[in-house]
Amino acid sequence: MKRISLPAAFLFFSVTTWSAESNLLGKWDLTLTEGRMVKEGLLEIRQTETGFAAWVEGGPAPLIVDGNRIEVGIDDRATTGGRLVRYLRGQLSDGRLSGEYGPEQAATPEELALCERLPLACMVPTGRWEAVPHVPSVIVSEPAPVDLSGAWSATSRLLNKYTSDLTEAGQAWMDEYDVELDLPGQRCQSSGLVNGWGFRGNDPEIFQTDEKITMIVGSQVRRIYLDCRHPPEYTDWYPMGFSSGHWEGSTLVVETTYLKPNVREWMGEPVGENARVIERFWLDNSKDQLVGVLELHDPKNYREPPLKHVRWRRAPEAQIRFPGQCDPDSFYRELYDDGAMDAYWQRSHRRY
Figure (spheres, rainbow, N blue to C red):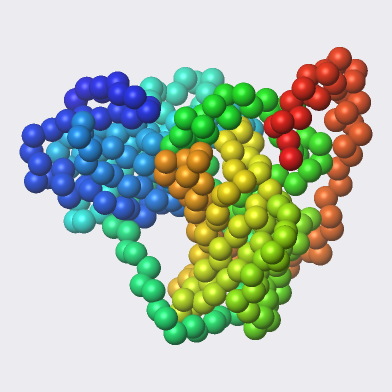
């Protein structure tokens, strides 16, 4: 096998035994297991003019295919913020993909010692993975609402795909991004719906009626209207946007517009002024869990919609969540002390 460098950060391996590799094409529900930690996402493999190509959670992923064997590189970030790549190596057997993952090269003793001492800071994680064919949702016209009320706690961690499939406009925005000056949270502003979605610490507490679902997410309140309500004719952007929901069978489908321009993740990928978010929530009764999937539709900035997948369990033991404490004065004092105020004001076009 060999890697071939191509634009857009893709790696392909061209093969001639088409019948074997064609079984890999399509969408796959992906699960990574690392000790007690579980991450879920969507893997898609397509045939292009130049070979096979892969996307994970809507972002490009290096891919090698050799018969029924496969290697996919997923760039993620550690809890400490550092960028890492998990190389998933495995094969297709009995209609499912499975194998093990780890770093590209064998970890050093120092790296392994850090993983043992500080698992959340580990830059060379290892574990097992599997993927099963994705079954598209069947749209059921007859609503069959279920009760989502209560406090929920995440049972899976987000597969934080680091690289998305950005357009030229999206890449230009990101290239100019300065996390110290532009990240809304630095100055105690909301990072918005997409940025905080699914993270631990932002677990939802849900209050449900026939006309509306109210979510307390971290220290923010979100309303999802179920009565076919439309936003006012003249409305502003909001960090959590304007959300309308409906039931497709027992699945809650939510569309959110009027999102205040923001960032998808702290590293600066944009959420544009015309972005639209589609979410789906349903109960997995076999595990007594709430499942959520988020799609960010922002064609100005992304060729493929970025995705997020998360699961929550009911958490009746959860404590009352008080608003988070944040002192914006400390941000501005530090800018002043560092002589960076002029640079901050010159970047006002980056803030809304």
